[in-house]
Length: 331
Image 1 (cartoon, rainbow, N blue to C red):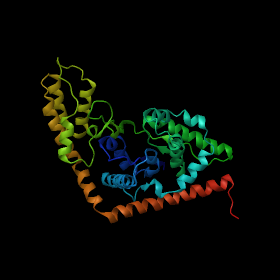
Image 2: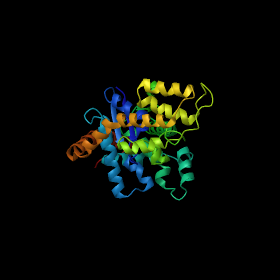
Image 3: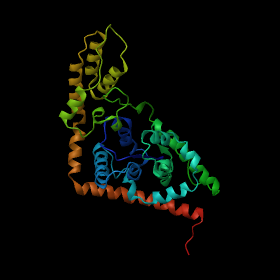
Image 4: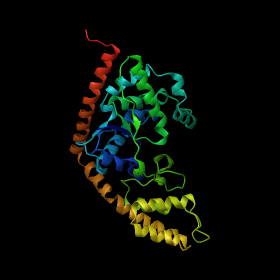
């Protein structure tokens, strides 16, 4: 059985892109693999959240993970800061990580370009903390997006470097988990690319969104003036609308509007109204479950405690063995 690990930064609510891009697969994976899913609150400190926002965001992601179907009995669902052993492993890995290789990391260059006033050491050593997250549980598979592939490669580098330095075969080489045909990319509503928080609130449909909020967002979705000839190829912004309809609407609904487009009879207003109602229907079970679980403080606390205990058991074993390999001995 493979050990799979994935984390998410607590920077806002889960949206349809998170669900179809990863979460839906996590739910099936927990029945087939030894899964660790964590909320990366240490990672979020690079953007300096307030104490109130930090705790509130962590709790919200935990609630929404549970509402979407992750089972704390089947998988290990935990908060990163509940497992302090990751910081000790982060320290050990940093001792063997070199400034040059960290500075060459594409994501670091992007971050300092986007926010030159916040070039902190946490951003520079983000790859070693990510490596510590993965290696702490000796994970063999990691679901990652394109933007994280370089970090996973660096994790393999750090793992192999440790093994060579201490002449052991301790850390495995984690590989990317490929969802294959199961991977669905969800576009945003503003026509600029994938659905995400960074593009603004109006770009994403969140699992917790109320019906009226969904209607307003969808009706503002970017379109064009319509096709000028039959069977015309759809421009990117229109493909995006059809892709969203493809994942939440009935096939006959999708086919109807596709036919309307191909015969130059499409009315985008009608299509958006239908898409909004289908999105409301699709997200309804999540929305209700989120409210139910959020109100059950005992269940949320119990889920967090179970995840903490399971993650700490794995982490303590790893760090204890690493300390012995390195040469730390008790007197």
